[in-house]
Image (cartoon, rainbow, N blue to C red; front, side, top):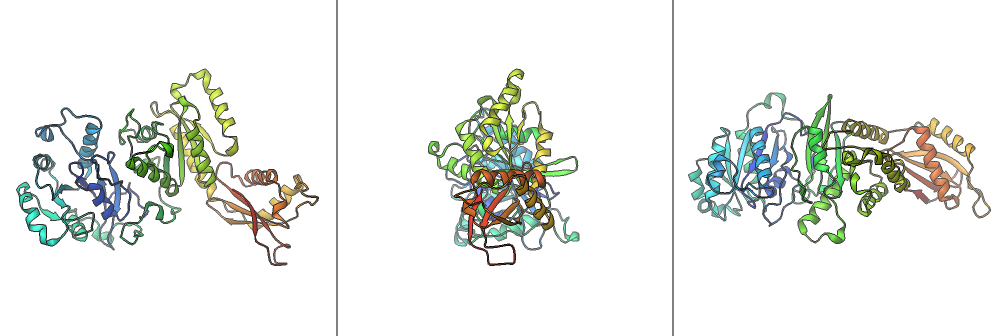
Length: 493
């Protein structure tokens, strides 16, 4: 999938329709990435998702996938929601917001089911929006069936196009039809700027196959955590509006949703994810897909915010997530959300408790916040920017040599098996995260405690306070350039 800026002024194309007509499958097919969770069960999509569609040098647009609209009674499709249950009212609200922002509306219908009364009333509602509408008749698997399956949809009075999102039939034709309906605004500038998609064998790359994040552009921030920790509430608090559906019911968010924010001249993209429970408690296939998508999202963000419910303390699942991010060397910070619900006198003790329990990754900052009251939000963004900058630290060779001499002079390596390890030189292998390699005569003789001392010292000398860091110990037969070095023997990860 391309690195996209969803806050750019591109025209938006909205996918709308009742549940289970194939909107999310069509969304994935058009953006050439398996981003939206698809399932035979109706109502899987709740929050609206956005993605880039681009074909060669042609004008691009933002595609918006919305949840399946369900209304109680035919007239409510025209007049508004009545008797809506659960998330239906929230999904309808999000769909209406999407329509108000869209340049073109694609009404997706199911060709196998034929024209339903609800499709007719939804078409009436969209006609009132006064925007170009294209009826996309999905689940039409071949040209030989088009005339028969499209016949009754002509009654809606909109242009029709038959496609099969699942099998890719007529997807290129759909892109061309949509571009023809878009306002002509990008031709003079040579098209919208975006990077090409990296398509897989079926044209739909897996989420984990994305290209390396670019250094420029918006800062991508992934919100990860257990169900009901307040991730969606935090996104809404940052935006100052109800962009994400929020509910006391666990598992409200299912897809990983990108939400752009511009603040004080800077652009951020928040990646709101589904709550992550213990694998042993997951029996539902949709939730399994959601959790996998959440964990993959941490690899596609510059910094991850691990959101923890401060009122419940550090749970075993919270600690597992901390250990996972620390082991993977993911740049992250911990957000203690719902601090407004913690008594003022108990907050200092709570912070000390978290610091003690997270001593194994003491470099990770623990930040108090309240999504409900909007407290601590600016500090979270400042810290995320700082971590991102620290990840890019590159240390000159001369400074590396001086640093090694200073570290060794201050505290020599302890004797192991009657021999003191001898250090030859230090190099920086890479950044993001900063990775340093010590060449020694025998890496196996360097104690774990001394390896931790080396990391702590380098952090202090190079100003890498909160970013993840790798320190490797590699056996070598002499100083750089003298003899061929031996194999890698040990690393602190």
